Length: 201
Image (cartoon, rainbow, N blue to C red; front, side):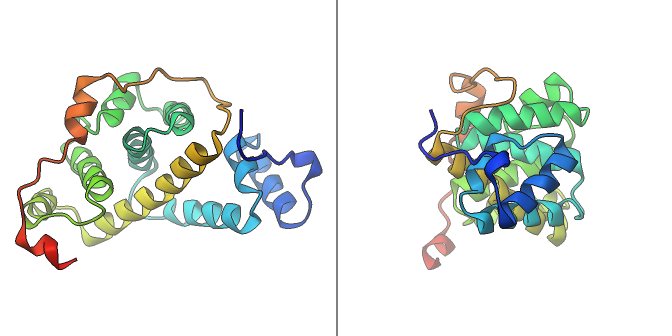
């Protein structure tokens, strides 16, 4: 069960009620994640605001969904694995697309490069080696795409950590764990070469 209370929309007042009403209009429901975040309305407002801002960026909604799937897998967030798979399916991503994203890859080379960048940002805390960053450049990702990838990683890491902390009850169709998938294990290993510049951070 939840370690942090889920605020009932019927009992919400003030800013929390305002944000719940907006979520109800947009989503048709108020997911448990939002009910947990609403214990601190400023946290809920910040999450929704950043999410709305990134939706206007250069990364399309399908790529953002794939980033969300990859980040949830890396951070081992059961709630977000299920919620993001449900959202990705609603956007038209196939089961194969969803599984690929959870494996930190994609059929499209550019998307695969973005997901690999997201993985490096998380695993290496943004401290990519020169050789790793050269691979980002070789994929011809723009500076805007790189920054938005980092921002989407931050957004999804927030929800992952909140749900892991609160043990939020999953209110989406539950997807099977991929923890024993050897592909995922391989993808999450840090294989970067030593880079003397890393010691400068």
